[in-house]
Length: 154
Image (cartoon, rainbow, N blue to C red; front, side):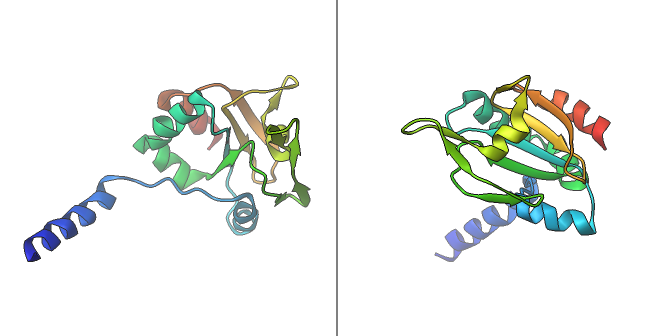
């Protein structure tokens, strides 16, 4: 019994040191943190059904270089475009807008992911510390492409 406990303890002790964790914030948290420590904000706008979104979440955003860059130089927010939760950000309350019986889009996702009158998933939007849009990109981005973008935004 003691041997199992010891092995389990070693296993759990070793895991956190081997895997960096991406710090994810809410819009409300970022708004407060930006007052004390202004940094650009990286927002991933995605949906639960988007296969390219899942690919980015499971590859690009698990890359150690991406995690280090985001944790040190940016605030990172993951926004589900179909979230029904009201979000208050930059003195405005954004709500989910139904478009059918089981479909719709959050107003904040529309505001941050619209490029040429079109919303596509995934979208990466980078905001300045004053919450103005610095950069938007529709489509899957691999780690190398995202590192290049983030390094230009630092």
